[in-house]
Image (cartoon, rainbow, N blue to C red; front, side, top):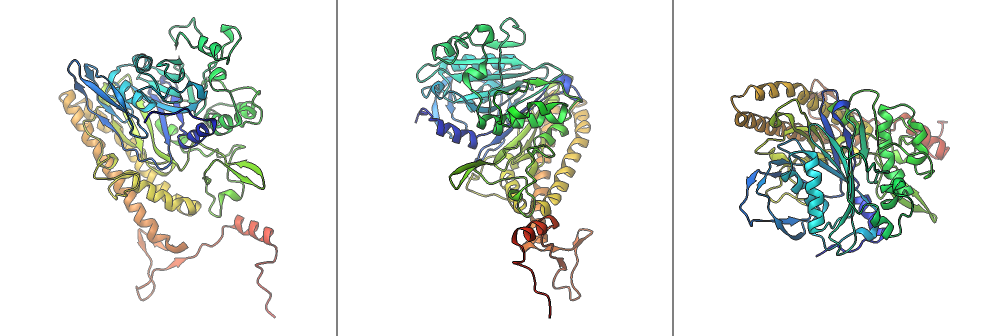
Length: 546
């Protein structure tokens, strides 16, 4: 069934359901010369494994079936490439990586007759590209040949040397054409995009750092969305005008990232918070005040606006146990008025989160890593999987009937979600236990990385290096899963029914008979006691004894 035109209400629903965040760190802005990009796939209830497309050669006339990534809908066929490359998740054997974030944009642009959706487009481009520039060329050529049926998308496209943002929309039903613009992020910069088109003016004279469709301005004129001079044309203003929704829910996440690594970001808060859409906008990129590591980027993906004016740990919404998460949907009505929840980078609806690390100073089979987490990054450990792998960890696979409605103790998606959903309601009490396991795992992964990579570099052949790194990645996946299962068992035992069983040296203290464990009852935190008493007065006051 072909996609239909989206109403504005439907597009808003899509934004809430598929709201993703992409962070970019160019090679000169990272601590070790890596190009890094991220993908938080924030999709309610979606079950996403770590996909693996094996490298292959194909005969002339062979066709590739195209399926929608989200709905698994069959769209049609396109000719297969003569050679396709190994792809692990969203990174290929040449260290090319692609992520995305949906900005929706003008509803008139959706071409429901196109064959390619955003997800299949990323997969196919990774299978056919050796560089970021080549991937952009592959993507834009494919959609202008076979049609593009998704709404507006902002893609991150990286390789070991360059990082690009590509923004794209269709040209309406039956057009089989797109409008798009792509810009290279400077080597010393960081950037981000989060469900809002961010490309403004296009430097059409700078062919090294810009690419764009020939119709990028003329189509906007044709549709009545722009009437000024070509030199003043802004892609995002024409195709994705600013609104409260796409600033407060979206641009605010970009602001939170920039705010960590640059001073003076307060001046952009009126725009990013949606309170003044005509206020000064954030730049597309900034030069950070220090260089970022993989661990730094992991921390960004765990952000809840902590310590900023948008911090959520200040009101009743955090509950008794100070959770930085809020119920969905993003807005709610009370007595005829509409209110909203903050939408940080870290959110409970994340199906998977990853960071890709591409390094020009290492052979491709060693240089490319996808740090993968099968849940909200705050609630899971990012596990290293190498781009050359001939297999992926068992815990990240889709098999044996496991799905969004079929639980498996052997699957990372389900075990990580199981643990997270125990922690959410009692965050301040249980999260320290999760954090300790998470951070211990990641510290171990970081410590092991140079050791295993040295072994791979010293292997007798590239094939032996691939075998070694595949085995290592699969072992780390199994190690992570077992640690998370152990954590799940510990949480249900130690914190059952609101008590805290006393633990010393990894063992629970028992009473004199050895039958029942000793425990404490933590009760209300002090801040909650104060709020409760001040809001209820003497209602719960125990009468003084006569």
